[in-house]
Image 1 (cartoon, rainbow, N blue to C red):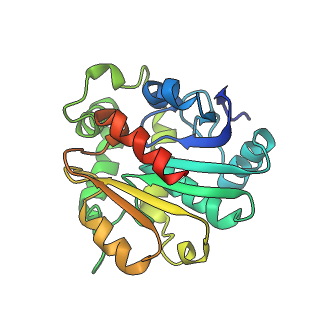
Image 2: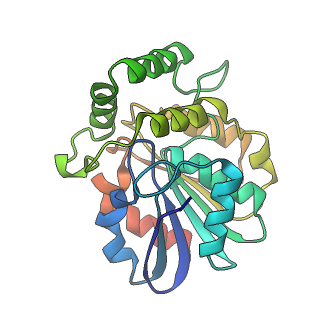
Amino acid sequence: MSLNIKIQGEGLALVLLHGWGFDHTIWFNIAAPLERKYTLYLVDLPGFGLSSLMNWEQFKCELLRQLPNQFALLGWSMGGLYASRLAVELPEQVTHLINIASSPRFIKEKNWPGVAEAVFNNFFHNLTVKPHQTISEFVSLQLKNQPCHYFPQSLPPVESLQAGLDILAGWDLRESMHHFKKPTSYLFGRLDAITPHTTMAAMQKLYPSFNYMMFPNAAHMPFLSHEEDFINTLETIFK
């Protein structure tokens, strides 16, 4: 069992957690400018990239074995769920929580925006029937108006993809997020087709002390489509 982490740069420890269907290479575009100020820990989440599929406790144990005692977390999409759970369970070690195009609850419910459960179930079914086509369509949705070289070099195993979908469908961190008191920021794209921009308004009601930002012309990947603005935003957060 192994958890792959690429470490580069020098400065504040910043752990980057990617989204569903991708791996740590999605961060390469912004890693170069960030590594001048931060020690980056580019993690392959369980079952993705070069990391073995493992449960939550195994993941947390393997991650902490490779991290310093204090670190900041940056999660994108599904990676935001991982980051949020780590922050809640390790409040003394996590200095900042920053989530991009993410939500403490991805499934739509009454008075809570998200992906409709029927749509999610249909997607899960399609993944078992035609996995390559399904993930290609999903990734294309995320890569809206982005160059094709951001597409992952190889598709993860279906078992890993299904495990990721179980997390997206099953984890609900809305209540536990109230217990994390360190600086927390959520960044959204107004054109996002996966994490609706209305999530920000719903979260502002629940967590008025969090910091929020909307990229008006971005979709699900503002760190790629609006790289300079994103990096400037990070600098503001860490001031």
